[in-house]
Length: 375
Image (cartoon, rainbow, N blue to C red; front, side):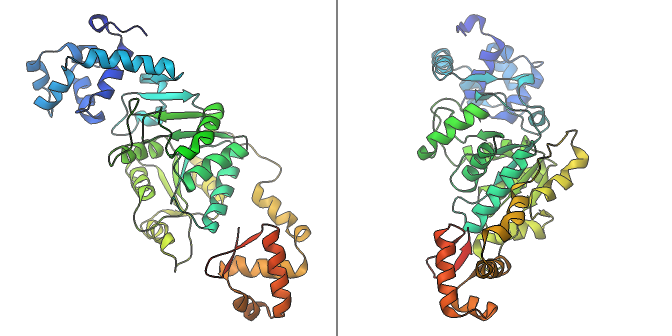
């Protein structure tokens, strides 16, 4: 796009409006309604006409009429080219995002947005081994069934959900809380590149925009808004995943929560969501059963899901002693050696050697408090 401010295109006008510091999606929607959906008319309107729009004040108008806008737009269009990105507007924005109250003006995009249905998976940045395992299974199996997995590419549950979808050779979308040129956290560079190659990375924010207290909640409303449902895998009493779940409820989307141990603070958020009406889920099939009536979609039916495979092969993988200990851990979540002895009546020496074998095989892990849990 060659920028000429006197003959600005519709898309260029949206890029500029989207990047103005004093305007947000709601105020810009009011302006578009007043100017018959034409963003170019907003940029060329007089101060008097802009003031006639409800909720539009002097600070917003100064931002719209800033003499530096032309140079900023020229630089932004150059950044879009430089980073092999695009800026999508109107019908190119997924239909579900047009249904939410604060539809984005446009989205910066790298990669290709896959077809739905979309399901978002969110949770803590510091998940337990239990949460890591459940998240991996949910995302992998939903991706195998044809869902596009949506998350925010953050540390923890977000990254696990994206990676599991990629491992399943499925579809995934990451919404960023930064400009599309900023990879946050930086250690997710490879994941960022893989998502672009198999799906899309999307951002509402202009190039160079760093994360702050506003950007993540804005990002979260898009994660939930595009999705038929939002799954919270693990969350404390506060956090971004609960904000995403709240947005999902307000947007009329399904909210799912994975139960955890009642004595762990990392499960407080999910348990509160369940008490407030979120749907308790155990596996991918619980989600599919709930969403199936509302989705016009033919699900892929693999011969066996990961969970089915694990059940079928468990008797072949574990010895008799290992099976006894694994069943005890599946029932109680975490146990130390003494508790395993109490529950199974296995000799202490057998327990020690069996635990070592399971740990070396990668089936269980010993925590810093000396307790064991299934990986």
